[in-house]
Image 1: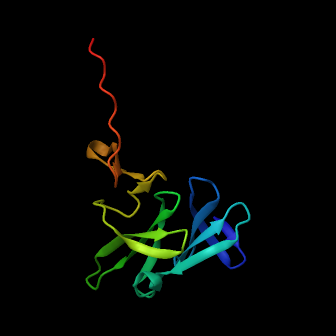
Image 2 (image 1 turned 180 degrees about the horizontal axis):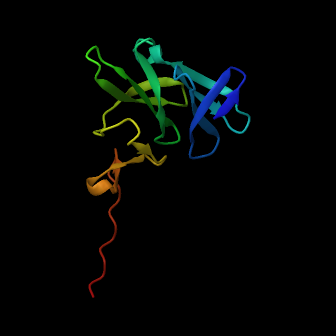
Length: 146
């Protein structure tokens, strides 16, 4: 937990450079991005900025920095038939604007773990982590023959 002048927030992630950090309001009403080390709020986005009704949706205590300039913010709620849902959204942290929805096949909102270098982890078969990326990663050189 992290306390600000406006209340209690949960620390979610530190940017790869260490110059910024992401918090979620303890009531899950918004996400905020702060300057580090001072803690000043650079910008915040309430639930309705993502196109959801605040009375039916909330910001999950998950997500983080996909890259230095892009954060993943997770919104969740319940449908009319009481089915839980969650959606991942990308935020451009340089401009404070929403970028797009980020589609990932996972079973819960906490399964995606952004790594800050453009890749992320999810659970794989047998519970082992699987690393994913939006851009192809360079392949490793072949192993020499024995």
